[in-house]
Image 1 (cartoon, rainbow, N blue to C red):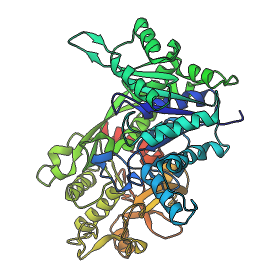
Image 2: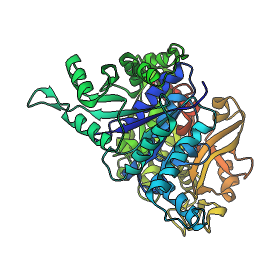
Image 3: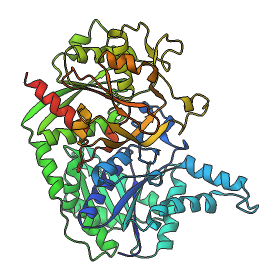
Length: 537
């Protein structure tokens, strides 16, 4: 197509309107038309990345193949597009300022006073264009976090203003996602908040090209005309985004509203093919018409906030569609589980997933949940800390190693079956210092995982500091907990299984990060299938 074109997505009136889903849906439609598309997120917070943020604060921290700890919206981008993201797809204010300050310390600004304009804005513009300059994409969609008018996002808005001017006509456009609230007392939708939001954007020198309006009620033709007139956009560029039953409906809803057509017209792209959403719609049909139901217990310590386990929940949707079952997830706080109530809490489930996490809070509840699944021959999947809990549970209750634990939870445990990785022992900084990104793993061919993957060489994404302690491997294997996945470079155990159990798998990595609509993760597909078989007993 030649020059890369840029689409900027801003938000107004309220946060949490779904800029990431709109960006991913538009990207999906453009991809379905034969264009090469990627999406990046600009986050206004000063943290360098979300790696040190509490899940209650920011939801899940998503990890890319190249080891970037990023915003959870990148998970949506990958799930919709089936295209891997990277360090370049998530930019934070912290990273921008860190880079500029490092350049200043090296004397790269030749003694000039370093200012927000031009130095910070130039850095932002460079980061925006890294993906476009790679030559790999026809269109780069950039989502700007926060809401127009926030102090934090002003440098990003100014960078977009400059970049639109530098790129020239038809090479960029701005989509403004806004809220049309419904006042029940008046019985009508109100456009004034959107008018003010667009005005705020214009005060920063940016005219929105397309308005996407989040609403609980249909927008009438006259209301769309009013928005177009007062917000200075064409009527066809006022796009309704009504509440959907699932985020996976949104691409089709945007197709019906003509969002992709308006974007192509404004970017002067004439050679795009008609959109082909056949594969997407097959997935939707299976997702919406299940022939059965399975109940999975999600045992975690951040269950109050759904976004803490976003990728896991979405992976269940993908795997449920493959198995043609509805996966009903019962979130259970691990702090509330103990030996006296575990039977009551987990009874009636068809599978147990013990989720990732950090710190000692709630781990004994996770261990109880592992024991229940093991003893009741219920399908079990342990992810990261969940796998470590499975090793601890087996060490205590089968090997008889009293006090067995992870040194993360008990520094002085007599049996450190999980311990700090050697290279982590002298690290003092928390951010970006874990084992991160894609690592190789070799599988035993006849194991559960070997059969599920259909391969013995895999790569999966990691995010952890503590590891299976190899000193206990022989004793654990003799007792029946097999190590069926090994990192070929480090020799570290990545996967454990109980061959005597119908389906018991613990993995040190995060399979949920790689599950997409087009490629549901085989581990989740296998786990849901095992739970479905268990439900028939």
